[in-house]
Picture 1: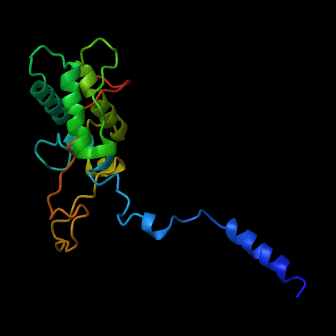
Picture 2: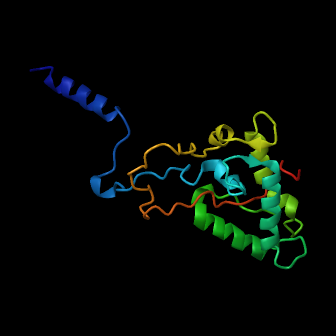
Picture 3: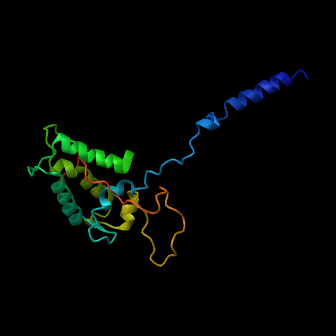
Length: 186
């Protein structure tokens, strides 16, 4: 019986050091952590430019899509997005993609976000994912950027509900271009 207090203290010491304490049940979140690849991961930023929806994004599709998107945002038709326009674009991206959104930035601080700054991030991502440098991103390369595997058309339909609980409405890669150092025009 003389060793009982020592054994008890040792057991309590081991228990205290055995891991991170868990919060009380009323403080635990009932929601699962968000999957950051839900909207297509990094590849989601550029998947929307696959104009013919064949699962292969060519550099030409990317260029045409980015130029069309920039033209839509350039409402003053001066080749320049001002801070207010950039703020609207960035807010729309955050609303759509939350923490994975890529903001439009005026990298050279001249008060104008031109096409080069607008398209830098998508061009840079395209170049990173194009492993074989053939000017097109095939499904295997897109998967490296977080895109989902293409569905097998012969497979049976998936009966599991979508993770967002919105009844199957799935937004696919709503991110657009963004500014970023090291990018550039083709």
